[in-house]
Length: 330
Image 1 (tube, rainbow, N blue to C red):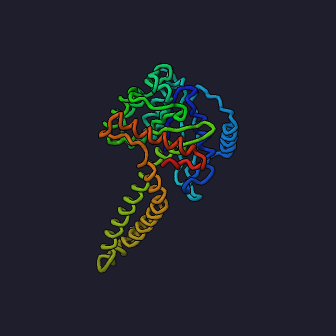
Image 2: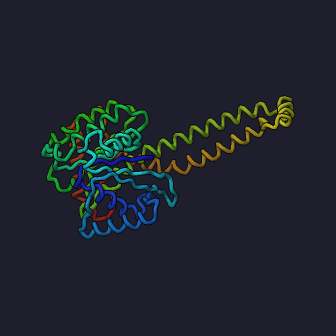
Image 3: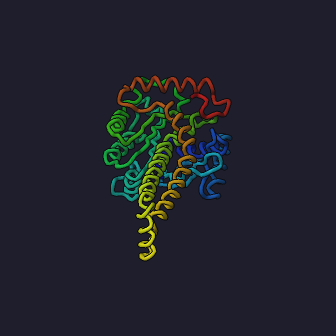
């Protein structure tokens, strides 16, 4: 699975990844995050610890890619790559090497995380923060989409904003419309805080991973059914006189008998059923959390989203993440 993360330089993406990684070293409803490479694990832990001490990492203007496992109850259930694009890619022309890589990644992405500064949205300052450019690229990618995609619009520094103006999401109107126009896209608005008090930090990642886990579970279930049906069909030809003839012919031609083919299909079905059983529970847990987010839906107006976001912000302030529970506001 490939996740693409976009946002202008200084919006806090590196801080977000490190904060997320630090939080998800503890089990969150059985979920953990682990870097594929041990050196990367140590680096993210070190950055996360420094953030808690008030030392924030510097961003870069180049594309970087990280590889992680999503773990559930001690097992790896999903491996994914995470491509991080900084402000440079948003400012460069379409002919640049980094811009071309971005367009390629956007077309192949299974999850898309867009970081938007709440202050920029509230003040209408979409130019200096490349919000307009970012949403334009995302909207274009959605038009050419041929596979399911989860798109998280992450509202950063939510805790530093006094309130949400009614027109705060105006600059995101085109992207929201593009999400609603596609049957392949699952979108949500997700406010987070990555200061000394962390809140909602795991939600953007778990949201975009949800569709991949759900798709894998659905595929495993359907494949198990197909193997079972083929096994039943082969078994009909492996019985009685037809089965005896098949045995003779198979021995002469050195090909498997219908009975052997049925057994093979049954074994494949068992493997798929086991996979489905392993990811069914984490899939349902992710589903429950996703349903509590401000999902983008055609039946909702911008003012409806503002109300939902305001309620979440109020919960963030009341809890102040004192319990260190990233899901406490839900």
